[in-house]
Image 1 (cartoon, chains in turn red, brown):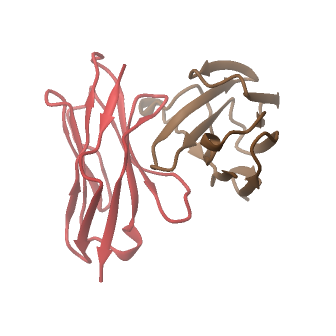
Image 2 (tube, helix red, strand yellow; image 1 turned 45 degrees about the vertical axis):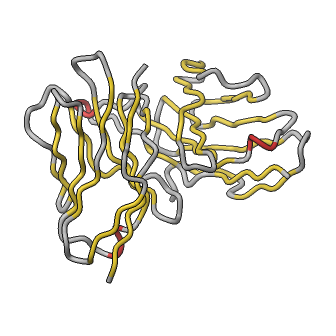
Length: 110
Length: 118
């Protein structure tokens, strides 16, 4: 069974700075998908970014980018120029049915 | 208009009661899901329906019974509620089964229904 691990329960970042959230996963598959979802206090799950394992190029979406290391089974999320509105729980997820990690709470300091 | 809507958003009920959470999506999607987020924020899939047919049942107790009257609705019925059922339940939908970035198939979530069993 696939597992997803987020080793940082909480992270904090100064507004306008950059922060990286870690995610590792375990799988025997060679082709798969990975996702980062954001859950603000409103609880709505919002897709931030997604990556296809067969693509070498790291996905980017505006201020959000990933560092996908397939051999290491690592999929970290980098948030640049952090904004107050980025404060939320962030969940890493594996596979098309979304196996989620335990989440990282990101706090943004003004 | 909300794409995936759930009612009620908040529900407090006593142990042993039976309750339902309704979900509707207006995206024209063929697949709907229920996910459960427990008190530690751990989020896990419960069920998946594709065109009203059950596709995935992730070893959820029989007290939980999803019902899909049509492909735009997937309601969750819970019988004999227990304290451990307290959680946030998320409904979601996608055009096809599962999230497939290469085809653009994305799972969209509702805002969640917060169930508290006392």
